[in-house]
Structure formats: C-alpha cells, structure tokens
Image 1 (tube, helix red, strand yellow):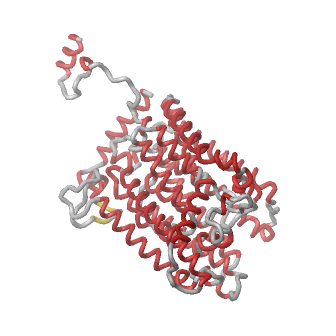
Image 2 (cartoon, rainbow, N blue to C red):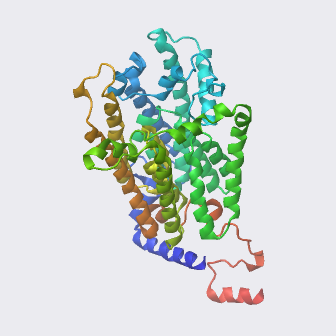
Image 3 (tube, rainbow, N blue to C red):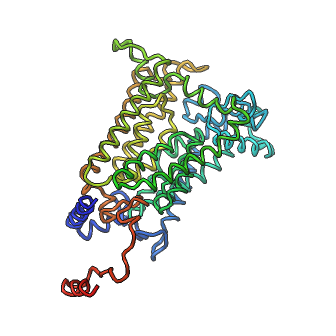
Length: 502
C-alpha cells in the first residue's frame, strides 16, 4: 500500500509537469472535446459560477434535444405503426410496441405475473412494464390511427416519458461523477446510441440504477450502492457485474468490509424483489431463467455470426445445447484476465475502468447482443475512457450496426424486396466492426491502467479516482489525534520541534 501511495505521488508530480496552465484549463472542463464552450461554464461543481449556463442546464438542454431527435427518428412508426417491413426500413423497431399485444398486456396489464406468463424478463422489469401497461389502459384513446395501432402507440409514449426521465437522471449522475471533467457526462446526454436505442426496451431503468449505484458508492455508502445495484440486477443482470470491479479494489486495498456490505446490499435487494413472486408463482418467476438458459445464438452475437458463416469458413456449427457453457466459460476467462490485470498494474485501477472492461466482456461474449445493449456501455465509457474522439467513433460504429441489424431482419419480412436488405456477409461485417470498436475502447482503458500518467481523469483529479469511495486513498483509516496533525506547509525545523514536543 505504501508503494502504491508513493507511486501515486510520483504520477501526480509527473502529471503536473505535463500540464501547462492552458492544459490545466482544458482538463478542468473549460473545453468540450476539442472546442471551447462560449461564455464559459462552471469547472467543478454543479453550481453556476458567473457562467451563461450551469452543467445541469446544459445537460438538460442536450437531453431535450436528444429527445426531439429520438421522436423524429421514430416518427414513421408513430404515424404508421410497427408493421413489417417498414419498421425495419425506418429503424424504429421497439419491443414495447411488439410485446404489448404479443405478451398479453392489451388484455391484462399484469400479464407477466399471471400463471401462464410468457414474459421473458426479470421481475422488476416485469413490474415496470405492467405499470406502464396499466397507465396505458387508464388513459383515454389518443385518436391517432387505426384501433389496433392505438394501444401500442399509447404504451410506447408512456414508456417514452419514463425513459426521458431516466435518460436525464443518468446524464446528470454521470456529470456529477465526472467531477472536474464534468463535460464528459455530456456524451450520455446527446450520444447517438442513447438517441437510437433508448426506446427499444426497458434497459434504461437498469442503466439509471447502475449510474445511481456508482454515484452513491463514490460518496462512501457501499451498502446503499449495493442495494441500487441489486435493484438494477432485478431489471437486467449486468449491474451485478460491477461487484467484480469492487472485488478487485477490495483485494488491492486489503479491505473486505466495503465490498461485503455492497454485496450483501445487492443480494438483499435482489431477494426482496424476487422472493414474493418466487414463492407465490414460481412458474412465472422462472420464465426469464428458462428462456435465458435454452435460447440459442442471438442476433449480433459472436456466436450468431459464427453460425452464419461457418459453412463458408469450414467451421463447425455451434449448437444451442453447448452455447451456454461456451459463452459462460469465455466470459469467466475474460473476468479472470481483468482480475489479474487489476492486481498486476502498479496503480490501483479506477472503478469505472474495471466496470467498463467487465461489462464490455459480457457484451462481447454473451449469447445475444441486442442493439439496446449499447446503453449499458455509454455511461461507463464516458467515465472510463473520456476521450471524445474515441468514444464518438465507437458510437458511430454502433449506429451503423444498429441500422445493419434492421436491414438484415428486413430480408424475408412481409412485402420486402431483396434489394432493400443486406447480405449475411455485410451484416457479419457490421457485427465485427461493432466488436472491434468495443475492443478498441477496451485497449485504450488497458493502456491507461498500465500507464496511469496518460489517464486524463487522473490528471484532472490529481492522481486519484473520483469514484473510489470507500477505497479511496486514506479512506477508512483512523484519523490521528489533533496534537499529531502537523501542517504540511510548516518549515522542517518547526515540524521537528512540534514532533519533539508531542
């Protein structure tokens, strides 16, 4: 620990030597990407400091702009419905509209909790979907379009209202967690991935809970952070993966307490949400787990692309029966690699770096990569590798992949023409581009873990991790008695006299 601290001081001095006054201004938030913001903005806190707009105001404005673009991009489906093949050509597909009738919400808003449920999502997400369906049926008809289009449209709009609030909350939390580099959180406020994929499914609930959990952890409340991650895991499984990042920090700092409290909080929250349905209706509760275990290679996964091209490449086909073990094994190996790397590097890695690597590994090795999974990575990328050019290049590749998925699905859809879709080879190329872009960001994170003096977050924070929370340097140590505290700015002679008197 002493060696880690000593090296931190050396890296801090190295960072200060590399930072001219102009560089320091850039790193503390006076610049967004490579451009100055006219009028100037507050550089650290969420309060106005004689600026034309505060970070909160700017974030809200950008989320509002993103919301307008989202609605415009989905307008073809909002006006004409979600029928194939137009839903694919316009890139406005949404599970909300598709599942409203297919999973029984139109007849029973609480269908996920019925004995014959076929809703393949975790409990808390089932609750959110049912609440939205109930609100939908309480609202009067909007009077838009055909009768069969009315229910899905209202359901979509109700969920949109929830998502916009979650989007704004996630962006604001990311801005707060970014500290001096608060402008990095704006990548969440106006990111193309947020605009395109935010209205596909209910993933934004898990994303917001994860961001909230990380924020609470950074404020030194591991138990409450664990509760939020546990609630996120009751929405989507990925938030619980952040406990792996906390485990690395616990081993590095040789302090298990905060990690244990976070883990207990996560488990307790998950059980509190799941146990009632688990005990009263185990059939409905188990649909998600049965579906996840039995499903074959899903769209845009490594495994699906493998099976599309296995004949041309002379490779064996991956069967559904062996896929779960294969995907899990590869992900475990990835996590072991992150764990070893986290312990091997000289400086303790930042929480966001570890979290991004683990979640990225899950995305790359999972049995399916739905287009909305990009939402999981955007806030983590903004905190882990806040280099605007790299992150925006990645999001643009993800946008190309987003439309490639729908054009691939358009083939064979009712009324579609061959020239209005793409070939297997083109689709697989888009999937590989998405995977390579994620791996590129992972590589940038690894480089900055190995060479922390290149990490812009550490440079801005004086060598520290703004999100370390209970594992920050000096956290958890017993404070010295007042008589033992020697001001660091005293001359050496006075310091020695003070020690002698003590």
